[in-house]
View 1 (cartoon, rainbow, N blue to C red):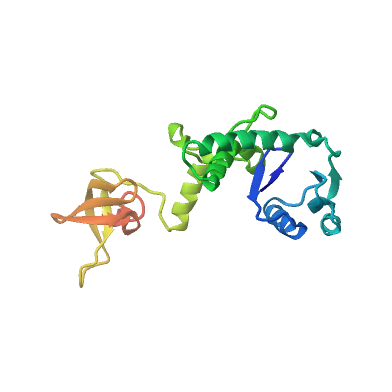
View 2 (cartoon, rainbow, N blue to C red):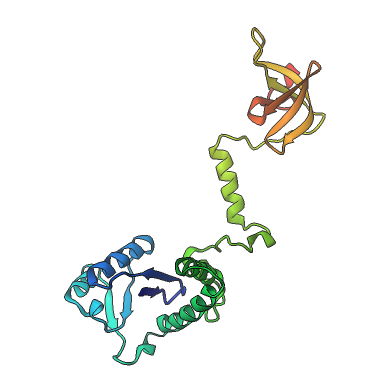
Amino acid sequence: MFLVIVDSYSKWPEIYEMANITSSRTIEVFESVFTRFGYPVHLVTDNGPTFTSQEFKDFCITKHIKHTFSPPYHPATNGAAERFVETFKSAITKIKESGLNLRSSVNLFMFDYRSTPQRTTGVSPARLMLSRELRNRFSLLRPPPLSEVVQERVEKRDQGKRDVSFEIGQKVMVRDYRKDSRPWVQGLVIEESIPGTTYVVDVEGLKWKRHINQMLSCADELEELC
């Protein structure tokens, strides 16, 4: 058995495999969803005992959620959820035929469904729910979104990495870790070891590998020392 929840605005689905459908267990699942996305204004369900119970009614009242039911024997009233259920059943059957187990099939279906533009909205559920697209197996076919570029820069900053680069042939000052030596010594960049991160510097005929945090440009910070 599966509990299917669909956000009517974004078409974002949540699917939970249920060992039992008691009101208590169902409420636990809803609480998990609401913890991530917030409480809905309006919840439409079928007329199953789970949802008609006093426990579930009290739950909705305490969360200030308007709870209504689809008419008996007419589940199509809850259109968004019912259309999704049919799509879900059909897709899972086909995916399982490829050899995946049930849990893997559900995960694959959910990932693709959330990433695919919907006919009614013109955009993916992820775009409306999360304000961004999900990074998926097709992402390598196109340039990374701006959000990923920004995140990469933030991570570099948080790691203490300076936003600088050096050119081959550029004079630099590099940290000198030899005993009884001055902290900094002049050298010449001769090779980029890891792009934007480490360089090979010629220091008095020796090849030293230095991280950018161990290098300073002679043209800027230490021009008077070079």
